[in-house]
Length: 385
Image (cartoon, rainbow, N blue to C red):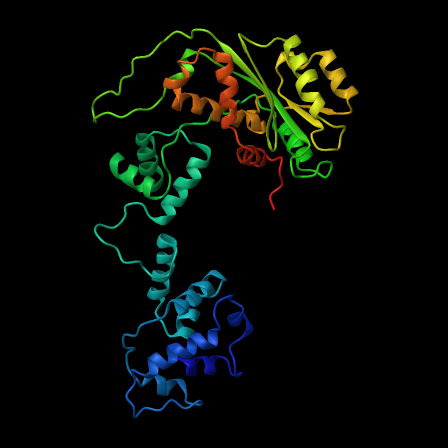
């Protein structure tokens, strides 16, 4: 084999296009393959460096030999780079069928070597699974029967829903609770927001930002959402269906934890919100661009009063309003989810609390600085190292 390369390429080494494949040294590959090939030739036959091609043909039909993985990758890479398959087969002393087979393995399994398969072969090849990944990037809510129909129409594949479910699970495409995104979102405003919090005007450590928002709880907040029962039986829970008394929790969160919290029965109005900012939050803030100098609020009506904006600006601080329908950009929203999960977990005890307001304030203690740092980083306020 190495002899035939020498005949085709009179120079002492193959052309540079062969050596620039990004694979192990082609000469080393060919040398190993040549050794394996010559080892199958009778010992009396000598292959001098200047033998002609006719002497090679007299060796007879090529016997079976094991071809290494890097040699197969070399052949496939040459074909992908535009070489003619007949030339590759002639140069590397392999059959065209072998090259076609190695390329098919690469398409189906991601490697030029067919993996060992136990049991029946997979119905869905690697290429089909890649197409399914692309499909789910745009259509996350497809039912299994809809995917079965799509496979039949687009790939001529017949598969049961059970087999399809198993294949999707093995590929990491699991069933999830849909996260709904408002179609009314303004992506341009959201991008401008992200550019600011990730820009050079801020430190990138999230220290400048304080997020303020409200959440509420009623009797239904205590109810757990999941349970266990035997297959075919319902997991029933006897609980209240009416909301009962409503309590609201207003919090201010920095990157190192909650800095202020207030709870009341009912809902906060604009005057109560104003006093919360004036008395509990602003005393802990500094003029921009120092730490704790930017107040992040959503677009709730009570956040947009003129007196509130005036006192914030008078303190030398900035106020930033989140883009509409963008709770994912407000780190404090994730803290509220944690608080409600804590209430559900300890609902039996917390329901017996004599003072619901004191109970809500005590629950805020489950929020740690490490949690807050992670939520700020997840929302984009902290630049990744």
